Image (cartoon, rainbow, N blue to C red; front, side):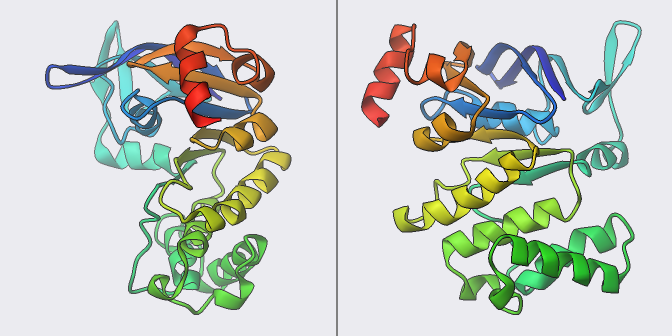
Length: 250
């Protein structure tokens, strides 16, 4: 589903990603762990070209993201072409990013109508089903300001699912939530995992990664330090840096 080959990303003179090589299989739950500043979120944003890679290749289902290869050179696609690629890649951010002037229902309806050309009636039916799926059928007419953080994040997940993506990206989806609200969001994500959705999750929720992930990657300093199953990376880490990180968060 996703292949990263020698991916580099720099911001000015600061190199944030230093040659990432990763593969994510179809239907896999792939969790990225690591300290703040390790490059996890930057890598996630490169997957849908919210950040341009400085070097290397990133592809989804064999299709190069954000660029067209001509000979041995890469040429960035036009914004409209990049937007078309993003239609199949759902993303859930830390801070929800809901439209504050629209209800939960309207937030979920927008993208299918405006981007996929779905009729209002069909978009409404689909949005109601998705909000019910994330446990918010009683909140469809509430505005974001009337919802808790956990409820807003569940609306954001429903909104991403409304585009029927083949890949879901989660950028620390619970980090902005009060501790008692974390579980309700993780439960929705666990349901998605059980249904076979391909997911790449940047998270500090080690318990979630241990329970749901097929593959866990520990990143630090812009490189992959360690990768493997949860039992390998979380329960039996081999690298001293991984051991040190886990000792502080477990």
